[in-house]
Each structure stands twice: as structure tokens, then as C-alpha cells.
Length: 233
Image 1 (cartoon, rainbow, N blue to C red):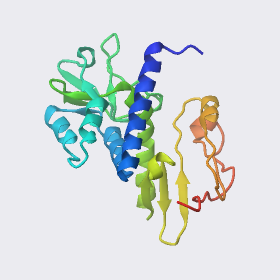
Image 2: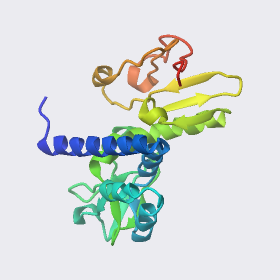
Image 3: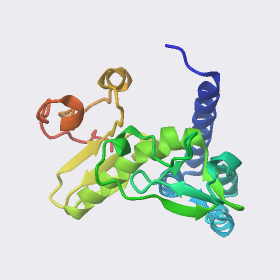
């Protein structure tokens, strides 16, 4: 399968930035920095000048944080703006590039399948910064369902930890009675490509793979019951 050179360069930049953040967080003994960065970029697709300055100064005791923000957000390109504003999807909450005919419609497959998709939110483009495209693709878009799941589990009484051990898992949910679940969320349109990317996670008591009805074409059914955390988590 041919891959555009631009996509390869973008993926390399994303991987290098993520690795640098993980390595720095580990070196400082502050793994929560990685989770904090991921949560922020997932929830903020476009930042105005004041918001971007505040984001850079959010963690003053870690000088690298401002650099991470600089590398995560770039100036809004002229072609992204419509009448001086940038559209942010009401579904996935990421910026939308207008089509050639000027139509503003989210290209994310999940949003395209929704019949109840909210209209876009418009943000002033002048002086604004937008999340880099590779981070939208590889961090923010997968992060959106992860945050949604975390909120749903928290509503059921769980204490949820996102991206534990520098992203060993996407989230761990722990209940007061000792029951715990570790979750690795995958957001792929193609089941075949998904299967190729699923990694083996060691020392699970039991594991399961669950596919949404719209993806699998069948009733959702676990391969096994009650996944458990590794002993050293």
C-alpha cells in the first residue's frame, strides 16, 4: 500500500514528540505530565492567542512544557479559515478543513455516520493556533472515545486513571470493592488493520475484545470475561 511522503513525515514527527514527552516525564519522575499533555491536546483543537499563552505557561516548573505546546500547535493556515473563522466539529471536537467547494463538513468517518451530529463551533482565526494534523490523527481523534469511556466509567463509581505507566494502557478503572478493568481503546475503521496493530499485553488474568455492533456486524460478545490488571500495576 502506497503511503504519501507527507504522511510518513507527519507520523515520524508525532512519534518523536510523543517519545520525547514520555522520556522527559519518566526522567523527571512525573508520568502524569504525559497524561496531562494528551488530555489537553485532545480537548483543545484550536487556541486563541491568550489561550495559547496560558497553555504554554500552565506548568511553569517544567520548562519543556512550553516547548511541547509550541510543537503541538501551529498557526492557522489561510486555507483553513472561512470568513476569518475556523470551524471545530461538534462531534469529534477537531478543526475542519473546508472542502474545495467551500462546504464545511467533518471528514472523520465516525462523524459522517451520525445523523445527530451537532453543528460546528466557530473560532476566530486571527492569531489562533491549531493542533498539528498528525496529532489530530494519532492522538486527539483516538483520545476522544477514550475520554468518553473514562467519563462513563467514572459515572458508574469507578476511579479512572488515564494513560497509566506512560500509556501502557489507555485507562484503568478501579472500583471500591477491588474490581478493576484495564482498557486499550482502538479506533479503527478497518477491522483488518486493527487486528494487525493489536499488541500483546503480558500477564492478564483474562482478556476480551469487544467490537461495536456497527463495526463487527454482529452482536457484541466478549472473547473472555473480566480482564484484570497485571500484578505490578
